[in-house]
Length: 463
Image 1 (cartoon, rainbow, N blue to C red):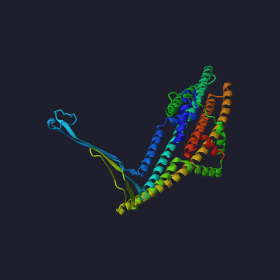
Image 2 (cartoon, helix red, strand yellow; image 1 turned 90 degrees about the vertical axis):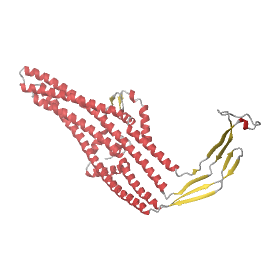
Image 3 (cartoon, rainbow, N blue to C red; image 1 turned 60 degrees about the vertical axis):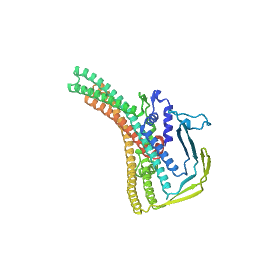
Image 4 (cartoon, rainbow, N blue to C red; image 1 turned 180 degrees about the vertical axis):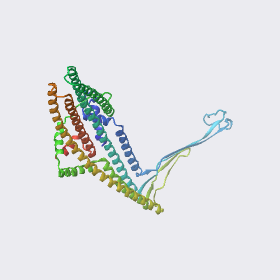
């Protein structure tokens, strides 16, 4: 997992995204991953787990006895007059006394090695537990990785949705302003009544208010995406081509009950095999089983061997000497006689295992419900997209018909406003349903830990 995200980070830094005139969805995802402190925290945690495993390994390796160096001496002061004058020139202290004495050094090399030869299986179990801890951390990092992707996808789609809504709001405002100008001329000419003229004014004010609100929504969406990607200035976004999703949308919307059941079975199997959170539930269950075995090692004895081999000790003094240590082998064993304490520890571990098994069953059931609900939501949203497309087509025809009659003064202001508002609502509805569908696809990608959106689409397209 770290290798996967590291490649993403390097590619994000090497693409020149900061200098690009536009920003694609893939680039936004890469930047969000590179900007995530949560992922970096998991990287450090994974490194700490690896160091802990090394420490446990080093504790099982043979341990050499330490070497030692001893330096000592005896010094005293004598009067010069009492010293033999045939000796070398003496050294005086501050009182004028002659300093005499002796200096000795002793060097001892390691003469023993000791190691555990049987610890009752504790290290083997601890090694397995450490591996589970590392794998759990990697799954947590993977889950966080897909959460980052889901967040940035949603932010990216929200910006595009707000941009399209703003374009529609601007067009609606220009239309309402033009309609008001026409209504004003007709009102002054006595062609329409005052209430129709006031209705045109109200429509213009409403359109202007909608436009202003949409502008604020776009600003908020761009700010969110900017914070996720870490960009100081957010460039224009590449648009999403909905044509590539048309086949998937049509296929999902046409599924019958038996096809839905087949899709659910295949998707559930894929999600069970790859969902990081569910995999961690299984790892927690494995850890609880190992904890029971670890507690039972309290019944087992442990043995340690210590080997003493001949090793020299050098003494440097006025009478130098070399001495050798003796050869010897010592094996010591120990076992706890507090069997009631061990039994209580085993009982507590078995109780924790029972709770973890219930937790795993809950996770299994929740995952199945989550997958089924997600499929139904995706199918419903696909149907909504097709329905919104048909509704927009009809609303467009109604608007064109109403506009032609209104320009000929054969259609009332009320009927024309109704057709115009229906067209705007249909366009909003289509935009919303399309990007809601894309957000659901992004969430499903994270649920099944699919490599990318295309991989997920290839998995779903056989429907």
